[in-house]
Image (tube, rainbow, N blue to C red; front, side, top):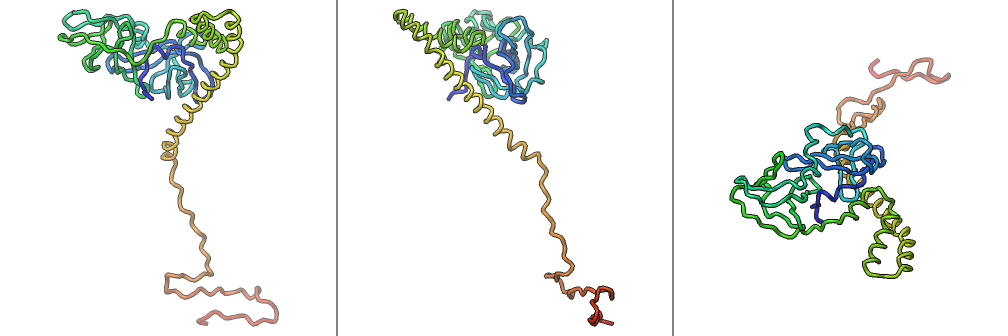
Length: 286
């Protein structure tokens, strides 16, 4: 499975704190390090409405992310969006003009394709789901423009990663329950196929079970992600543990020394320890 993903598909992904084991909210913005050409961090809101404050999490505290969920270290790593990152949001980058250093217009930035493993930007997307054919080493992100070499001749290829329509993006944000999402998707399909209203009603009713299956699949995917994280962390924990000292057997003074020329020790018994009527044994040498 490819690790490449359209950056905008992360909008609306559920954010989960591994330490607390709870849902924190949904991804509302992605921030880009223009110099390093990689994801710098992301922000989430606890609700899908823009009334609550955005919480920023740096890329170093993002353990795993996909279009459905993002696993972060914990709630405590969240903070207000840093000032230097505020102007580097993906929403602000979309629509930027792509020009050559000589000032020739090339296209408009529509999206970024990133690698989910390391957060690096691997390709630029332009309108009509086209991918700009260029080495990212030759791309420069300025404050207001995306610049390419002066002699660059525009060339594009069709993107392998399909975009989502507006309705699909909206229904992924958590604003509507999974039941409504699945019901809406079913109704949309039957309307496209011009099926009668009875079929629409039936599709809506069966959407509940479909929603449950979707929730189950998502839960399983999240659990698998957590298991992978914990498996990677296990060798690190083992390396931090001090090596246990080998157990030392107690020395028995009555046992002979197997590797020594010393004679067996003779234990002298005190007179009071000798039973009546027995002759005490004198130690050797007396």
